[in-house]
Length: 456
Image (cartoon, rainbow, N blue to C red; front, side, top):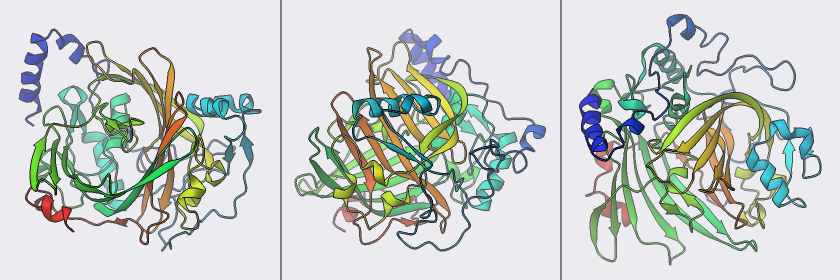
């Protein structure tokens, strides 16, 4: 409840810089209001428990029937292995499917007309979540409101905060605060490519705990904390070194993200400034706020809700996670091996953002596409400061039915101007999969513990 005085202090600083009117227009005046009980009653009825349309479209989008059943899934299992493509979108027939394609997919088809293709399969609405997340989400519909001009919200500690969103900020909060289990640990691999298709795999180890959405977190113990994590690069040797500790708050205007770095060679831990926004990652092919497709904050952008539409999105991409495929099978020149991908028609929320006057970001405009069944950002289109199309990203979602959890693990970030890309979160060649529902409390994530993490 300290958001108001905190914003007052920030507003005073903005006023001194002549930016106060802009700050008050972050999302064209977000309503910040919970919905009425009559609307909330649709959850679990005409709407799914997290706010998607329960019904199908009467043609090629089926009704949601609870997602994949909660049964044990072995590594490499593919519940839809018998499905065959309904059709394949190519550069030659893309005009026929133009209304279903993002600008990014159109650009990829045009840039690589001989090799880029999109195999389209039957739509499987596999997304599902634990019952306590459904229950919390229904309560949130009538109780959660935006605070601090949309930079934070009140009053919940679990669940999707805005299952019946009233504006673009609420839609984006559903992605940022979505359920990801209590936490996870494991090895992830990332590859930066050259225009010729060469690449180097970078292997990292990460431990992460979510405070928001933990079943034991309460409003009294939430303390504006979203997650804590420690990470380190372990290979190749020339990139191994720094170990990172990060505390990520919910309202990042009220409280800054805390970052520490431990370098074994120097033998000391140091606090560094908040790293985010358009700070470069992976040879500059990504920005820090593109991690997880988008992790916020949104204070540098106006945010506009365009609406909902049917589109072809990467979904149920089990083959991209299978140990049967090596990284060399996936990473090809210009784009990933599209024969291993799966696209389906789903309804998505469309959000437009544009850099606000007086603020800076290398991405002038971005369009986000969020899956209605999971609130995952599935794709985003990116324009440079001259309004030229620059980059596009896609997340190849998969449902782990034994968790249960739908994740946007394998993500590909394309730079159409340089014809390079980076693919992140590969696990195919790891001996063990990511350990989900792993959790350590905040005392595990301290500067004092970071050196111990470095030498484990």
